[in-house]
Image (cartoon, rainbow, N blue to C red):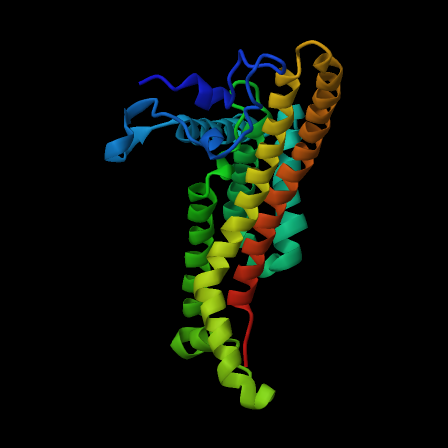
Length: 273
């Protein structure tokens, strides 16, 4: 089944100001895509976001494969870029948060997580793709659940059942009578709210950023009529500004997502008394 053009472009291409049609503002319909394959009613389908997630994964694997398939003592440009990215996550995030001794074994996981999130974000500014995969809540939620399960498993493995319970409840008898209330809040916060907030932080930023980009892009096209052309130029400048801003935010959100993942693992490995 072919995708509906209005859902791919998120606006009517023949609608301009003074033509008697209203401004086609972006909305939830801008984040919905017809299946490229299969039937949406049966939940067995393959759509644009799934395609971008698959292509993004292949791009990341292909990049690191090409960079490290035949590593050299004096690295070439591609190997140098790959090593710089790997080393940034290893030293700048993992070592700084978990520590070198404990964190080394989690470096591959965090590097994979960082570049996957970053690539999914970057699709927003890639021509033809023009959509951040992480603006669909299911993708960051799955990643957050993977981190959450890892944190639960590590906490239980490191501290046993009693230590696990103390860890997730923030058990601290020194706080006195408010201990039961504090433990209850910590319990629900760690087991239920933590993966949700971890996912929503990434999702909300990408959703909002894409909506703003759509808003100014649609406005630039919509105003291309009569005197509105002057305003279309201003709107197009905002598209460029927002694109540059999104480049920054996309990298920051990948960094924050992995930083939080590392902080959770650090908490699982830390000794609690």
